[in-house]
Length: 472
Image 1 (cartoon, rainbow, N blue to C red):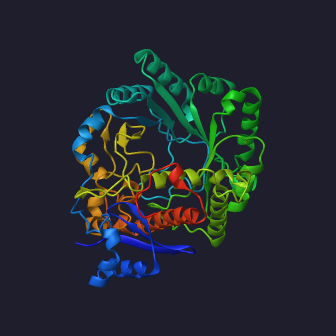
Image 2 (image 1 turned 60 degrees about the horizontal axis):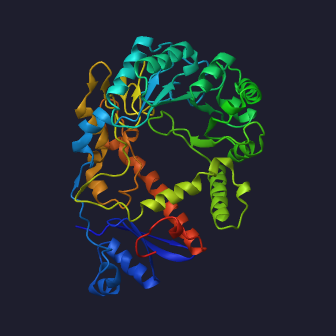
Image 3 (image 1 turned 180 degrees about the vertical axis):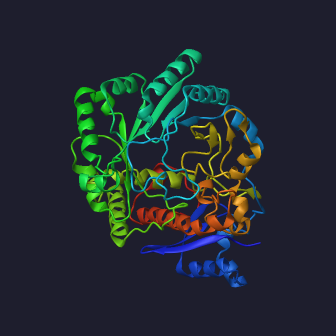
């Protein structure tokens, strides 16, 4: 067996992340060197004597982990049958845009291309019935509509919502929709507002950047139409406008600094929440490569978040695209010392497939979520007419089994974010596809640990919000 730890330095200290206790330890220079030998399996008696104050507290112990299996495995029939919290319906595969990086644009393996297929109202009602049968154990259920561009099927969406109200009166249901924002009209807006829809609109920044990637079928940019719609909604439906959230995709080669500035200064969406994502690198046919400018801009904006937390930078100067970074750090911190390694355990990445956010394609096929390839047999969990294939559910939940030898001794076991989307081999879930994704996860966790330490070194007390284990 081995002691699984991760060592790193900052300008102000030496740190050891202890995987078994999920704890972060601040150590001296000599202790750090001793821990380095422990990490390499070369520690001597003098090293262990030096580190006795840690081992006496339960740190730096040999790993207990022997087998990869998700803790929810035995309980999945219960979760599947009664704890489904959200279901997303693909109401159409049609779209009035042809975005250059779209998952359905032919650039991804195991993924469908654009088509004119739509989900029938009968199938939509079946989805609702299916969801209600499997969500009896949750207080509130979320029904989401997705495309293509879902508002192309607004009449079926209206009928579906009406069906929910008639057939399941008294069941708390929230609605959500993701749209490109180009085809709003008064009737749509009023319907969405009356039914309290959560709205996510895709907008990639200023016109010169947005129109480079998000274009209509004729090649014309979509920015002007979206902004015309937003300004109209803000003027005539102000309460509805305040509910709208925006998501921006930062494509390779885009001026990230310009995108940041746009969302900070544009008056139309001054008070709306904005999130940012990069182009998914999973199963894409051509490599996704971001330049140094992206990394520099991201690092600079993240540094401003840390400075603002320390009171050294005005919070109002933080980019809207980065305001959630601090809550992410605090959320990570709250998990430290609150999640431990067990003899039988699983890396942290997978959600509960078929429970958290199942996605139903136009033909009724069920997938773990909308992020996996619809052309993949490996990720197809079943069909609304026949239910879930529990063997498929088990395989998707336990993707750590694919890389068990590596996972058992990985220091990032608890905080790994790899899910089934990162190991989709088409017909099978693939170890070879998954392993190259590990490096990025290690970087993400390391950078978060480093941010926590930098904050602590400069007087930010995370203990005021969370209980932290011994060592730091």
